[in-house]
Image (cartoon, rainbow, N blue to C red):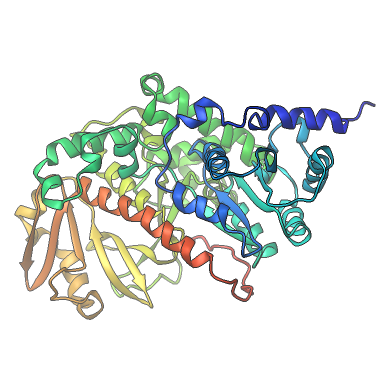
Amino acid sequence: MLTISDEELVNRMRFDNPWWGSGAIPQDVSAYPERDYFAPFLDLVRQRQLRRAVVLMGPRRVGKTIMMQQAIKHLLAAGADKQNLLFISLDTPLFSGLPLEKLLQVYLGSYGGAPGDRTIFFDEIQYLKDWEVHLKSLVDSYRDIKFVVSGSAAAALSRGSRESGAGRFTEFLLPPLTFAEFLRLTGHPLATVMGETDLIDRIGELNAAFVDYLNYGGYPELALSEEAKRNPARYIGQDIVEKVLLRDLPSLYGISDVQELQHLFKVLAFNTGQEVSLEGLSKSSRVAKNTLRRYIEYLEAAFLVRTVERIDINAQRFQRNHYFKVYLTNPCLRAALFGPVRADDDIMGAMVETAIFAQWFHDAKAKDHLRYARDKEGEIDIVSVQFGEPAWIVEIKWTDRFFERPGDLGYLRKFAAKHARSLNWPAPSPNIVITTRQKTGDISFDIVPMHFEPAAFYCLKVGRNAANAAAQQVEFDLLPPAAPDEGDGQEELPF
């Protein structure tokens, strides 16, 4: 049987690292715009005082590979030796299944000398079994080398990094595009407008861009390619969804019935933003309840959906939580699967809600505090529960009706009145927000202070804050490591 030689491995490394010869990154990478998340990511890559590997996580096609190569470009520009920068994709058949240390030794043996200030990038790390054990060993053994890895199975990577890499790995989440990034990457004139008054004065223009974002905005390549926009079903269906459902999840979790998984995902995508139950999903998807639990965990691991827990009017979880909400992590997934949406379509309410939740999902800790409240009297779309009490609430609407008739928000007013202390009202900036289509203003009804603002503006504001939050998290991550968490790092589904 033929075996792969070290020379073949080195030849492939030379092919994947063209800057070893030219000293430059390929033009297509250089011309690609940088994400808002790039600067804090580069800070982690450059940081060498703490001995930590960077684990870059996120769904397919959000720009992880490009961002790693853009980091190499910046390191080269800063004077790094071109042969001290190695990029390896573990998705490459030649490298498949090989231990990380084997690949590193082949590289070091080919170029000789001490490791020095080398930076090693391993792409698609999830395809290596027990990757976290391999990576921790490298971090401990090669103290002068900075290791950066990426992968598309966010939850699986996160669990592995917390269990085996405590104090050795720093996680960095790269989500789909925010609305703010979509405007900037597409060169929209509103991308540089920062003032609230200026944006709301141009709300018609902002709303038109918002509808485009719902249809095409989640992935950089889709947002920037007119060809992809003409056929988003093919781009998203084949290049993203099918690769995840047919390849990534089956290989990572041993799923045998991929058609069953596909059918469930389409049911969830069609019902994004809706309350569902295991019983109802089981009937709609024809999947057994126990299997449903696992599939939803897998879809969350692939960053395709997120679940949100239901609470009652007392902001307490139900003892038996039969109901929950499922959101696509990117609204354009639904548009690609079932057709683009228009501003006046009935589905716009759910799409707007999905888009706003998608901005909040950029916060890695959002699952810990975001809930929705519901009983027979009504519903509140977003409740931030902190220290057991609501800190702020948002009711998401794509209509101006409630601005003109705030008395119709009976359940919201009842909920707010019950939690007036924790919601901190009356106050100059109430923590009670209702989105509209165009209207803006502050209204007090039954002494409950309510702030109304357009959904597109609110979505833009939350998205802009997301990158700032990521930068602040990086500053925190650059502090000396805390003691390892004794928990298992696993998130509990709301059912």
